[in-house]
Length: 71
Image 1: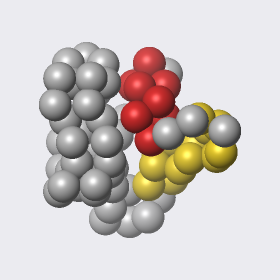
Image 2 (image 1 turned 90 degrees about the vertical axis):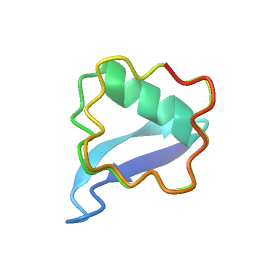
Image 3 (image 1 turned 135 degrees about the vertical axis):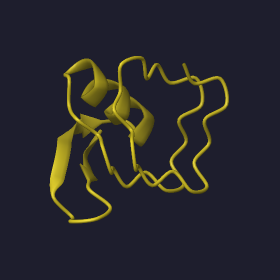
Image 4 (image 1 turned 135 degrees about the horizontal axis):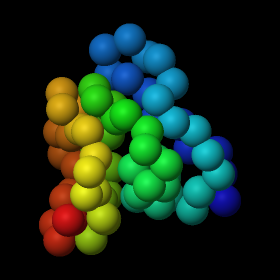
């Protein structure tokens, strides 16, 4: 596992940080913890099959991210 940080794509402010296997797991944990991911920089992230119910991803940078099967 490694520390994965999710930062704002606009300001660089840290939105979430934790030890996870990959970005998908980190995003799911952030959502579960109620983190506000508005404006998160997630470009190129593999989020296939991720559960994102209730996530605030407004203005998030998702260019090139894989969201196949994400809920």
